[in-house]
Amino acid sequence: MKRARILLLTPNLKGVKDGLNRIQPSLGLMTIAQSLINNNHIVKIHDTALEGWENKVDLGSNKVLIGQTDEEIENVIREFNPDIVGISILFSNLNESGHTIARIVKKINKKIWVFTGGNHITNSLIDYQHNITHPGDDIPLIKDLEDPNIDLALVGEGDFTVVDLVNKIINNQDISKVPGLLRQVSRGKYFNNPSARLINLDNLPIPARHLVNMEGYFDIGAFHSAKSRSNRVLNIMCSRGCPEKCTFCTTPQMWGSNVRWRKMDDIMLEIKNGVKDFDIGEIQFEDDTITARKKNLIELCNGLEKVGLPWCTPNGIKTNYHLANQPDMFKAMYESGCYQVTLACESGVQRVLDHVVNKRLKVDQIKPAIENAKKAGLLVHTFWILGYPGETFSEMNQTIEFALSTGADSFSFSILSPLPGTPIYRKVVKENLWWDGKSLNDLMFRSSLVKVDGFNDPNQFEKFVNEANLKANLILKQRDPKRFAFKYGKNANEKSLIKQT
Image (cartoon, rainbow, N blue to C red; front, side):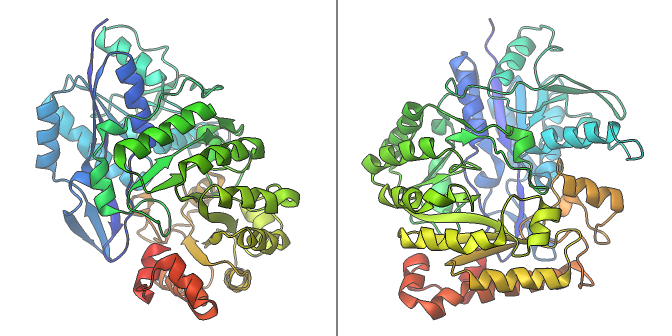
């Protein structure tokens, strides 16, 4: 069996010129890399945004492109001399930079195989398949595969299917039966094998952190949490999947509806190795629903007590899971080192939760959950989304006022992002709800793409949301200055609050 040289890349990212742009190691690429290493291949991971962090190209409208120049990326590829290049595109706003990488690869050597993977391509396929089965809906092109510089894509969970793909490519074998394979047949026509869902996560390798520039991420210190306790963060996932069906979220399509946990021994080994190898000061769990299976969570807490590091849940947890036993659950989290939970509330209007978001949450369950967490000793950060299609101006104001009344410590009011693969995205496309001149290429933090009731243009709405964030996140300073200082630090100012939340 031949060995392949595989270069795994994450593209330059679009960011806010005057804002905090978050960046952290890719858990997906590090896991895939270790799977390939375990199969005797030679692997390099390279984050072009990280390595070119100081290079910011002004895109106008307070937006910048962060990352390496084309020449620098070309030098990296030439120096490694790969047989295969994999490009991870997590969100659609990375797509343009991903295609730039593909073009550079083929400029160097057209014989290098180029494939893409990640949420973006998986969700693009979902939209394509949905529209085929819904007469009257336009069938979209999968634009990634219309690019002649991209040979194929892998959709779904690629931790092991990528090994199958690489083995077949490097040994000149037929790749047509590789699970999750997606290729163009002709313009607008594609060949796809069903992706392989990992029923059991026990065989997942520990992510290959030794292949990434961890010190680079630590120096920037812009990990996922709204306000980290340390710059030296270990980001980790214990589980995959989510049983919810929120209309704005891609998680169930990408990871499935069944929540699957890794072996606790593997999780704790990853944490202990990370702490030892990188002098970790904080753990951030990226699970989509880490509290869904309470038994596993409590087992994790028991292990974390022995580690003795602060940790948090920046990806958000369901607000109304285990309501009857929430006080005990939050207490166990606090006693094991958890300093903050993020509750995914989304809206303060029941009609919006029920009929727009499809979220199984009652508005009157939000305040008790916040109170339960605070009584256990936890800081409480909350997620809210404004600008859903069909949400009225009055309902947005109701959400803001309700959020301010909940007693939460901090708030992230986000602008709805119509992510491919979701019902909301398909609604936006079908009804052409984009602001004039806006598209998925403009997708980024607090960027308004979709028309909003009560506003004439996206800039007006973005200003409205920024003002809501500033107003909300000053409440704690007024209500409890000591708690505010504990959360943000003694020197926090108004400008920093917008960045941190």
